Image (cartoon, rainbow, N blue to C red; front, side, top):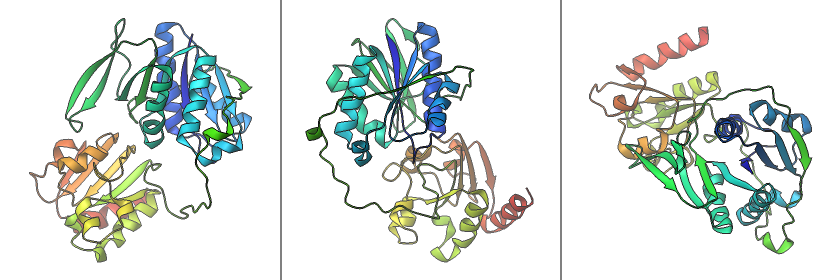
Length: 320
């Protein structure tokens, strides 16, 4: 028996998200006295794969099959399910991002397992197996019991700290034996955004709302984002007005993000917006309305005119 973790890579590199998953799996495995197996799909160098061992993986299965470059969810789910059976994994862990949300339900069906998405902590008990997750747009917690033998979890980002170990992972080349007819997606062209931090990958995100008063005032937000190497986003009213593109819209009906640091300028904090950003590790809010709901969710807040606060903030960041 083991715990299996599906670890994503970006152009052959792992990010904090994958290390967080392995750290979480290791902490759970220690309580169950089980090993952690990490599954990596894609062309990843050996030294990069071994980094997973630094966070608790005792074995890394590496699938270097170019067919998976199409990111076909059906094929990926087939590969994960095959690895789970091979490793006799009774707990399978994904990230609660777009990839995890797409693959985990398919794997649950293939293995007749129980699925809980958006888990925020280690299980509260193992017999019965009970986990905690946020519900009602992050306003409450639910305690969910999983009865089937196979347990499948998606872990909310920034829910667990990184824990480094001195574990040397054994790396194995793995063939999940996925048939060609399983791959139903064909990639005809790939256009990557360059010179811009992707919101779903950003460790820091700068966000503006209607309090910015117009698209002509976005220059200072762009400057701050550039200095911090941050992603740039906006609230839904801003994208609806056409001030910024819809690809920058974060919230319940836009992109769901979980950066380490999230700055909001002139955003009131409607529940729909908070539903997409509440997993941020730290939220800093700048708004002139002391009664704005955003301050209830913020870890730090400044009540003031953002057009006076923002220039001063930029100057202080430049000094640092």
